[in-house]
Length: 577
Image 1 (tube, one colour):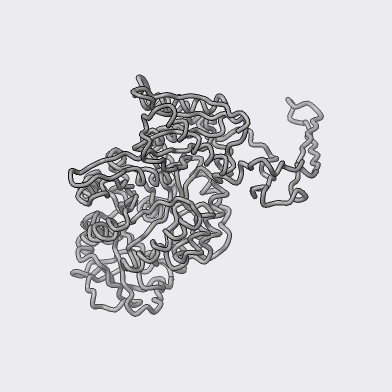
Image 2 (tube, one colour):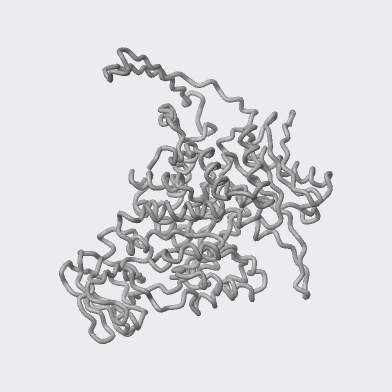
């Protein structure tokens, strides 16, 4: 790959590697050190015989004025973190810690647990949001055509390498080391000898001790006889199975999913649907049709979850229909050869970036399900996802049943923030402008101009006024290096039966887009309001930024708003604000 394609500032300062990632307001002045490097070169550099002497001096850094806000304590990272709530993370106190650590979207997975369980968790989330005053969106993850094995006895199941196990559609059979009942009656008709089937604990981490690879040996009527390829112990009540490269003839949006959305989803005004196992654009269209019949859920965004070969083959058409993409590397990593997974990630993220649609990456710090620190490879993987252009990181088992949910989000947030420091926004901006081409659409031109202006004047923030959130998402498409405060102006709408305000959905949905930090404005002020009301709303936004520590006196601010029939980008410089 040519160096011009690398989204890194080169060279990276060595000093930055030794700097603390801890916000300095958490440190005493005595703990803050300045690192000074002195380089001395002797010899002939062209001959390759030169010697470089490096001297490192350490001295206390000058104390920071406590009266001035510290930018580091504000929006700690631009990349969003989606946490799956479950047994390890469902009480109010823990959720408050997750929000403070950086979680912006809470994911609810109905592959296990009933509506009452998830309702209690969501009620706790609402309490935590009120207590922390931090906005959080809600994502419902569909079950879809997932192959499941229920372990009714709940006893651990030991599978031994080179022995045989039978997958059967007979749900009356007890799961054991010789028989595993699967919920798909047609499995025997779609697999063939030599096919690979992966079975693991729900939200498996891929550890060889908790998941098993099976090779299909023969089909025996409705049953499938498999050879165990590695010894493993399956624990828990729910296992998931994935047949590599094998199409499954189950609906993407199941009857169970529709019922949950129609009841639990409507009751709780869910912001996102994670459409599991999306295989065709029609899957998204059918899901959107279902939402359109459910009152306010017509505003719910659909994130297509790509997790098999079928979805990969139809990626472009799915991207056009979906509001966002989730790259489910767990199951897709089974369908694809290991050496191809990184190519899929880079290609898919690039397509999403150029389309201006949020892209979420999964399965990054699996080891933190059981340990308080990620592996070196996992830490690098998170950073590379950010550098590749991901909008967010989705955590599954790590926060749902892991031992260290708060530590996981804290560490992932820190890694994202560090990666963002070396993201080459200038290169990315040029690539995006080139991909869009000319002539640009009006709103696209305004958005790119706002980002360019922010970069040129080194603005602290960009403030954008929007009703639908589209202008904000277009600004985020160009990956500004500064935060974007999104002022969502509610609009009054009617379905001919009642009047209602829109805006809450649109504000929360910004929480899945990199760099966007939403706030909901007073509904009495329309987005095209007079100069005086716009100024009052702007002051509220600036007060919000000042309180968060990202705006201070004499900073420059880029404002993108609509005045009458015109869209305006303006630069303001704060005096003694």
